[in-house]
Amino acid sequence: MGTGVSYYLGPRFVPFDHMSNDTSSNEALGDLRGTIHHYLSVLAAVSVLLLAAVIVYFPARPPSPPPGPAHVVEKADFSKGWGPVRKEAALQLVVS
Image (cartoon, rainbow, N blue to C red; front, side, top):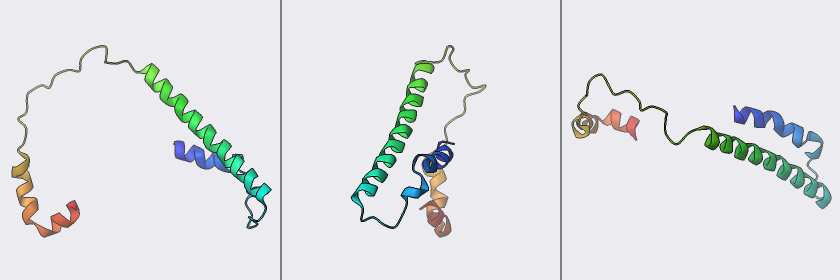
């Protein structure tokens, strides 16, 4: 969603009339850099505000512990499951 907002806001902060093939003018290039810098600063400020809101909102731990599982399941042995994958060349291509 943030990427979509940035695609929407980008052309509004950096208008199309700044975009030309004439890069020989230092003044126009400096103006373009200034508007892009302003746009990126606004995006960074919004990101910092959202991060601060998340940090303030979420507590260090939940109010009650999560419920335990109905039954305890024994962990599967990783090496036992990886054996057939090592032997199959087509699966190795998918995994890598």
